[in-house]
Image (cartoon, rainbow, N blue to C red; front, side, top):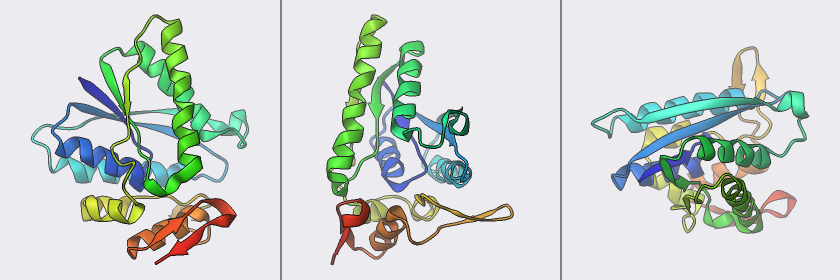
Length: 207
């Protein structure tokens, strides 16, 4: 049973990938490059490459990894990233029946946003059913882990590489985290072993 692991460059999907590797599963990692006006896809792609390089050291054989690209600038930057991801993933699973498991990253703090993202994957079922394909088993091995636990769980090099900034600061060809967006605040808290509950403006700190 080969699993398709969706890898974004963030800590959630990196932890899910780590779980599958440590479990000795047959997997292939996939990253969809979501080209955006703010160039956020550039550091995401860089993070994915670093994560792949780090986890390869734990494998006797190379890790299957591939990516594709979608230009959200052409569609409009307001295009929902998850909807784009689900649409592309559906087509991949239709074209590549060898993937019988779909692995996604999600953490315990996601709450209703995480549930909403997971619910979007039910769209895949309808697309596959239309093409006469069975729905792969969708798994989220990190669903009960907090982000702080994920940073502890993965290899230190993976933790250092993980990227989640929503509004990166661009200086020439250099990208740095803004430090102010929700994800930056979540990552900073997690790296200090703290937990942020909720999402968006209502996010609150829990020691």
